[in-house]
Structures are given as structure tokens and as C-alpha cells.
Length: 328
Length: 269
Image 1 (cartoon, rainbow over the protein chains, first blue to last red):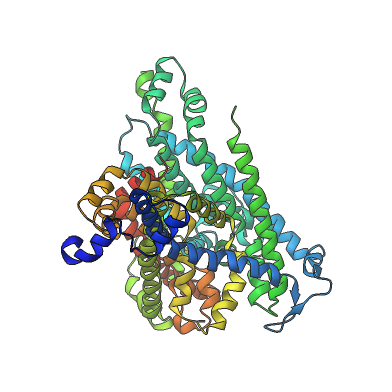
Image 2: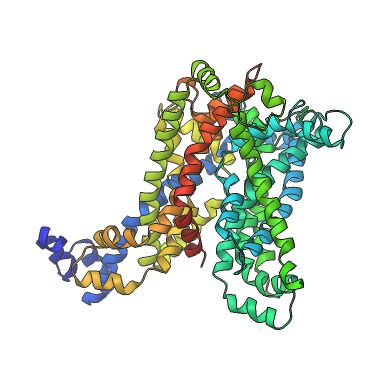
């Protein structure tokens, strides 16, 4: 096709010609004049042009701002008037005396430690049940359980906010069954507000992780599972000794994704509980937003907070990779 | 007897999970047709207030423009992301060299960079270029993610190299091989990438909230959040707004569901 439309260009591409500029010079400098070698280099260059746009965006809009954030974290001042702080680490020193920072960090870790393990175990059980060859209505179950993942974070936060309102559905149901004597102020108490966020997170993300496990299970040779069953292993033994080791890389992937996501939790904290009561359900990212863009914006201090998040994410990911990669 | 009931706990567990997953969605749909009083009164049957809810939503909120801006941002992000990350993933795999593998490793590290850590410098950067309130600023940071490049690179691994060689012998140029042969055979991967990207950008809240200072260009999630922040909440209207905001992403998922699952499966082989 391209041969017909652009014969000369095509000839120059496929036939090794001494006149080719860039690759010709490259191959000479490498001391090779074999046509095959030059062709490989030409293709390698084509490969670079294919991957450069996407790489540049990531380098310029992820890595570069990350470096800038570090420089920013050593500056102080209001709005756009920023100067280097004296001493340079004063923003970081300030974190140790910031009670709200410590509180939001603690709350975020509570979400992480309680919610992520429950969610991943639930997702594993569900995926395992759905992987049964003899299960009926497989597509129906899968769609139903994944569907919450198609709902936006703000949307579901507001649905949960409505259901858990003082005079809302959850209280009405519990009162109706006589489980509680009076309405529970779900969003007005520290423990219950945090619990509602955790329940919301479980609802929204379990099906999402399940899809990854299902995909992983489909790549496992089903005969290994059947062989274990024939050898007399029960469902749990089959899962623990046969399925689980083969799923390890995907479990690692989902653990890192969920940890990362939880440490960056913002939408739920902002919309479901509005951080309340008294900031006790507020996440660290929500606090970062407040410091950056509310009241009296302080970009330097906010950048220091963001670097704490960055370091925690990196350390936890490294830890998970170490544990997950261990061969036993 | 034991054979027949062996699966019962499994079915029971699945039923509970499915019920729990669907119930809040049912509540959302039903509540969109009820008055605020009825929603708080826990009415779980469809009502007759749908049109009234729509009227009060459309008259008090810039519904049309929020839907429009959300659509522009989500479609723009999805199209651009699919174009540049698919060709990058293909490039990393098909033309791989040591240097390219090294670059890929570096890019993967970006998965660990929390958005929170880049948000403020990004805001300053776009502000310097006078791009606050522009769709360009909403879209650009999300058109390339290491996750999508990885998805396409892994999928390219299953793409037979013989086909590429044969196409080269036929005189097809490298770009033409990508466009005419690779893209049509990788539909499930594109579907998975499209679902993931569209849902993420349609529902994105934090970045648009930061960069779109003017309420005239607000997106659907911002509109929802603003209704919530009002002094008196009309819950029927709120649930209708939530329903409208949820429909596009859910529709895309339901339509592309099969390919989505296939694409993810192919990628994590």
C-alpha cells in the first residue's frame, strides 16, 4: 500500500543505502557496515519515535513536578511570593507539631490497615467462587459485583451519605428490626464516621480487585486445580496450596494499587463525611487540599505534606515487593 | 445429598455479595423518582417525582454545561491516551533495546508517585501558561500513565512477530504495520484501556476541582459536590443528579464488558 503511494521513500527505508543520513552515521561510528545491522538501528529509531510522546508526558508531568514539589517543600510564604525557608527543613520540622497532620495520618492508616486486607480477601474468595467451571449464571454474578466500580467516587459517596443520614435508610432499617433504640448519628461520631467510609470503600473497590483475580485465575492451568481435587484436597486446601501461589504476582499488584489508592483517598473524605466530626475522618490528602487551597494557602508547607505521602507510598511499595517476591 | 448441597454456601455468599453490590444502586435509582421527604422516609419503591426532580435540578444547577465539560474532558483524555500509550507500549515491546527497557523501568516508578505530590507544581505550571480553567489543563496530565503503557506492552507480547516480519516483506512501513495490523487485532486491549481511562476521567474530582476555578466550566462530579455543600439538600434531586452522572460510565462499562475482561486477562498473562 505504502509501496504504491510513496515508492521512493519506501525504497530508502527497506534498501540499505549509503546515503541514509542518521543511521548511516551511527552504524559507521559503531564500526559496522552490514546492511542488516543498519536496518535494525533504523527500526530502533522508529521505536523511539513511537514511545517518546508518552514518555515525555510522564517525565514532564510526573517526574518534573515531583522534583519541583521537593524544592517547593523547602520554601515558605503566602500565595506566589515564596522564599527559601530558614532553615531549609523548617516545613518538615513543623509537621511534628501539627496535630491535624498527625490525626489525618493516623486516620488514613486506620483506613489502610482495616480496609485493604478485608477487601483483598473478599475479592479473592469471590473470584475463586466465580472461577468454578460448574457455576451457573457466572456473567450475572460478575457484572453485579463489578458494577459498583463503574460508579464515580463522588456519586457513591453521596449515595452513602444519604443512606447513612440521621433520618436515613440505614437507621430506619435498624430501628425497624429493633437492633437499635434510637437513630445512630453515623456521620457525627468519630468511630462510626470512619466505619461508614470503610464500608463505602469495600463496596466500591472489592469488585474491581475481583476482576484482576479472575483474570489471573483464567491464566492458571485449570488442570492443576482439578488434580488437587482428585487427590482429595478440600476447597480451602486447593486454594491455599495450588491457586494462591500462582496468583502471587497479581495479589502483589492489587496490594500495591490499593495501598497507593488508600493513601491518596480524597473524594470520600471530602464528600461523604466532609472530614468530620472535628477532622477525625479526614484523610491526609484531604488535609493537603485544605492546606493548599483553603483558608490561607501555603504551598510550601503543603508540598512538605505531599512528600511525606510520597515517601510512605514508596516505602510501603518497596516493603510489599520484598515480601511478595520471597520464594518459599 | 451432600453433592447437591456442597455448593450452597458458595451460592449464598455470591447472592449476599451481589445483593450488597446492587442495593445502593437500586436505592439511587428509586430515590431519583421520589421527593426528598420520601427518600429520608426510606421509600424503596419507584415514585412519581422524577420530572419534578429533573426540573429543580435543571433550574438550580448548570446541568447541561457540566455534562458537556465532563464529556469533552473524558472523551479527549480517552482518545489521546489510547493513541499515545498504545503506540508507546508497542514501541517498548516490538523495538525493545536495553535503553528502552531501562526507560520503561523508570516510567514504571511513576506509578508510585502520588498525584498529591505533583498537584501543586502542576497547578503552578498551568497557571504560568495561563491555562487555568481550560480543558487542556484538565486533560493533559492524564493522557499518559505507566499503567496504560504497561497494559499495551504486555498485550504486545502476545502479538506474533512473524506477522510483523511478513508485513515488512510486503513493504508495509513500520507505522502502517501498527495502524493496519496491530490496532485491529488488539481490540480487547483497547477496550480495556478505554473503559479504565474513560471511567477515571469522567469521575475525576480532585484535579478538575483544583484547576477549574471558575464554576462556569465545572464538571459533573464538581456539580454533585456543590449540591451536597448547599445548606438544604433536596435528596430526591441529589439522587437524580448522581444517577445522571453515573449513567455514561456505567453504559460504557456494560457495552465493553466482555472485551474489558478479555483485555485485562491478556495483559496479565
